Image 1 (cartoon, rainbow, N blue to C red):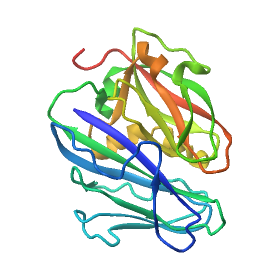
Image 2: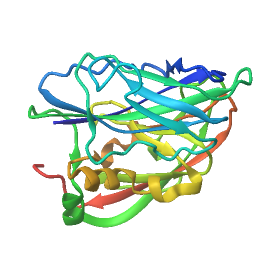
Image 3: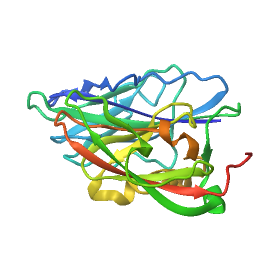
Length: 268
């Protein structure tokens, strides 16, 4: 069993004060309690600032409830500042404090995101594979292109389905979502599918460092030697949602989603 969830939020014109994030959409800083899950880990964190600030994640059940994980958040740099060799374990129902400082300009959104992994022994309808399984099952590489018009109010906006733009997929095949590329700075490129429990997963939208996002899920799977590459059935592409989390400067973003056609899915 596996769930992979990205959560994000914003601090509005925090200046030099550490402001707890207002979360995007239905995202919550409280760790889910999922039956059958026996390990929850904070895999990565990143931020998107309009002025240099400080990003922090901490809780009473982490090392300390004052700083714990802290990093400088640079301007227009969405590269992850936290991708540890040994991910931070977090506890179900614990509430993380995620706070951020940065711009003092009225209305400026400073944004942060984190990727959380839930792992357990109970079977459920979520499809993920390891890097080794990807190598074994890979047939062809392909991609889909989607266009997203973000809103100015924060949260996840510009949502479309993966089959809405250029590209071809086959209904009778399985596909691994290996990574993506976006043409502008966004905090998160998010994906939601029935094939991974209708929980949004995703990564950082860093166009000037596309080597990070282009094989984002493969990199995570290799780094942590775990099943972290999402897989979906081609027939479900019409309900696979893609969206972005951007700042108050509404814009149009092009996302290229990189896929690997698979010869099958383990156990199916």
